[in-house]
Image: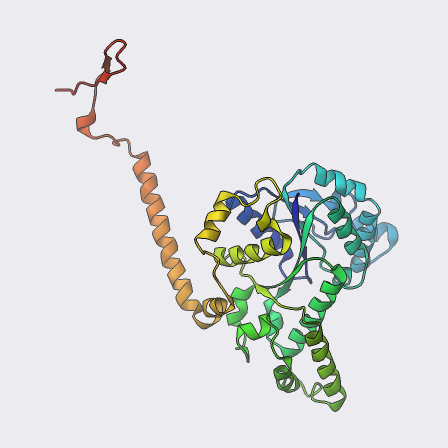
Length: 349
């Protein structure tokens, strides 16, 4: 049974960067992985592309023939793909049981109310794939109360629309320290704690939100999110190995990969990582690593990298040294006793 991630998110949330990083990470842990590009506007992929929707239809072709703009062209392209699923099914069949990363377009209407992307996902699911939706959102959305509330609504709507196992992920968490300090700890945002505490900050953000006309609306929106109780967030710094490992562990639990079912599932490298507790990182650790003590951790990692590079260089120099044998070990051709299986080596005088 093959597994797949459906990577969605607004423009600039880091979908292609994530697919590139996750593909490299999976290669490092010896998990067979392929990336499928479903974004007809993604003209330059940073990852090796196993299947590309642009081989079926291009955005420029749609815009020219149908007289559509970029957004309308992407919607048209997904409708075209939905009507030509045989092309995608044949391509996926050629990839066997590879773990698939689907890099999806960034138009939010595709995963909030337009039906084509959802229908495509359900067709893929019928092929036997165990799917997990990975909804990426730039962590900059935490810096303004209005952005955070909007992000909650977007995440909730996408979860209801996709109707599949779903993880919301705050990307670029390593950039969060470069913005203004947050009024709450990181776990307040990732766990979507009592949102009523956000209302005073929302009103302080702009005089518009303090208007009595918006006060009731803000409360209703907050109650809506809390009543569903569905939204929560993982965090990700795509260049940090521990962060990637922690996220992949959550994805494997959501999609059932931890229970096996595919050739190569539960590979030994991954089992060792899980057994050694390398992913015991909670949101408080993320807070300390990327916000409270980022400079200290960066310096520590820099020293570790330098020591690792020096050790690697020393080992390489040792293996390439032609004087690898001691002078006392210099030998002449061995003589063997016939039939005895014993060889003797005489030392040179």
